[in-house]
Length: 171
Image (tube, rainbow, N blue to C red):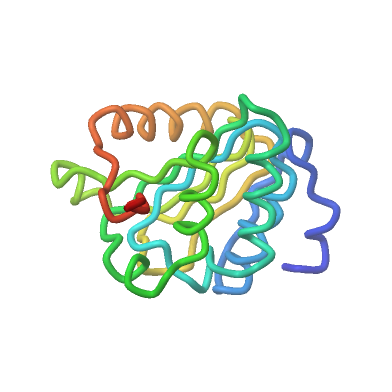
């Protein structure tokens, strides 16, 4: 899968890309984050460090967040405990850039939603039906599917609370 990865352009490459391995998932998530110009929405079970705690991914998120004051990175996590305990780099970054990067804990009402996904600039997606598996699909220009996932994300976002452990206490 990684042979044609560099040819994929956010907002242009309209093809269903099968995702079968953690390497596929990691590379596609990184590429979406690196190409995003305005927004990134990430729905995750536990901020799996194999996918989201690499220096390259965190750097791509940082660059998106600081590129423009209106850019947004929003992250929903169902079970953030492990990520907090292990000092996940995205959590640390959100503490340094709280106006651009926000992480919220998904309400228990949505605990049954087993999927995981990323939406970049409301065009590119990486979707996995089961968050604990790497199999899924990606498409760098799927505005209709991206709109569906964004609608679900935003609905849950509005009902979710910022997890107090995501904020650093300044004493």
